[in-house]
Image 1 (cartoon, one colour):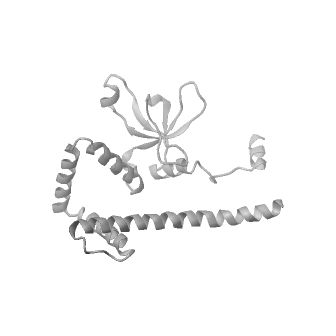
Image 2 (cartoon, one colour):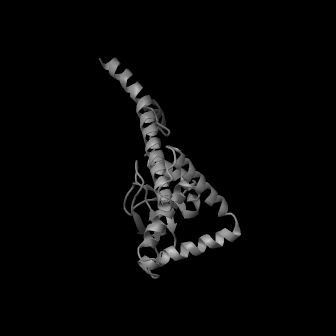
Image 3 (cartoon, one colour):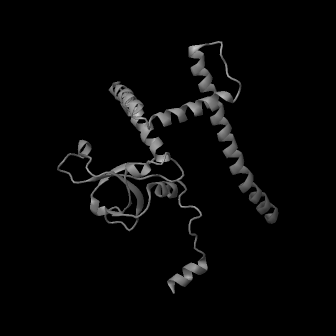
Length: 203
């Protein structure tokens, strides 16, 4: 019975991740398709794109906007639109939060800070963090010499931002993207040590 269970779990390890990934991709494509058709209906209610074409159209439109951001004329236009959005009460928080979140997955995570090892005072436990601001004066004041550190939580996107002395930190030579990957996956499957390896290390 145990052998049959191991065989079943081995199959589940292959099928479940694929099924979940496929489900998420299909759900995302369906959401993009509905969003594109909703935007088109605002212009002309009679126009409705075939299933799937709306998502492709929306992705292509976003790609074109990305190309236009490299043209200085449109770059200035986008900057003006962004400034207008940031003047709207409440919109600034939403806009900047979404923008910074996308930076984490858009290859610009390195510009958001440096990877550090955080050790609370009086503890031998260390935590992986990202120092996002060396002078958060608007929060703690200029006289309090502390830095802002984001501590990503495992198996999710999120985590607290703490303010601590730089003496509690040790900078690591690691890309921010790699640190976020390790934190998100809880370091699962990375450099597992067998009991024999651990015994040899102790010796």
